[in-house]
Length: 148
Ligand SMILES: [Zn+2]
View 1 (tube, rainbow, N blue to C red):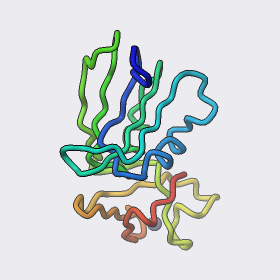
View 2: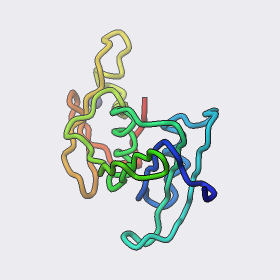
View 3: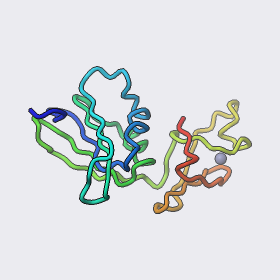
């Protein structure tokens, strides 16, 4: 087995260069007690440079995939079994995201703790990515994404 090869787990490929640290934080990989590989600024034939995250013994939930998609809309998820890729999934951000992002508008109903309203954002543009709050219609771009 080569260094950083995954036997049974997940490889998240085609992350924009420099995003692997951020994405590993939002997947809460710190403290995980099996092999984790972060590859930063790897040469890629498709996009110039890319990052990768390799995780032994771990998959991704649908919510985690959506979190990755917010920052890496072109990422690919490879499921590895017995050191072979058995499934490749191209990430796709759903048209509506619930509960992951917070609204930057302090007057938005979702920022009133007493109301207990779930955050809902709609994708209004994919390239460049823009999301709109369902309640106050505030538009946000990735540099203003704040995760719950
Ligand atoms: Zn709002």
